[in-house]
Length: 226
Image (cartoon, rainbow, N blue to C red; front, side):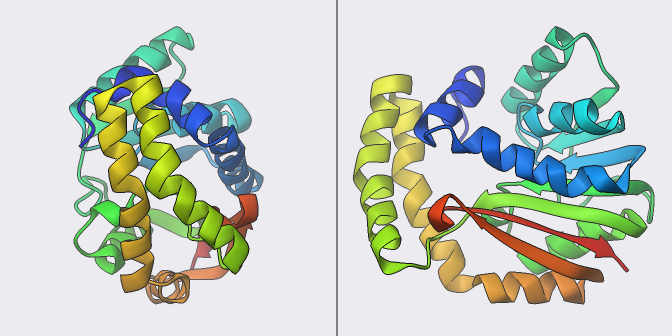
């Protein structure tokens, strides 16, 4: 799925989201920063954009994990270009984190739950490694609730996005463009936002806050480990 994407991922993710990707990332960092963490786990770290932003804002050491080797290689390059801050990257499944219980002060994850077989179990696994009182925060796409924007979102994701991906990034981005809209719609058909909030609560995450962004096309959620 991600073959051919890492080298251009950050640039094209920004272009194809009309600049919203960076804004959503900063909202995620804003949710984590007030807790003043010393150690953060960033799951589905990709090219380490969120991991680096978390370190810049909080000064925390960050461990980023991802399953895709190409993304991790690009992430390592990005860490080196940033001057080698305390951001370590490793290959790991979100469903089986090689980390002891209650180890990290905060856990962030981005664009993850559509790619796992059991979202509820994955949420429990990430909550497991966070210390009591620590922050769990998530960034993902969302289907707009308002009919006008939902129709515009559907038209963009099914037609304009694949063609824009093809024009700017070639066939790998065309394939992603074709996949993305249906993937988002299907995920929320099976796991509505209300289900997601309930799954966080059942995993021991309290005070869950939901922030819909960019006319409902983006989602930032956060809460604290009980």
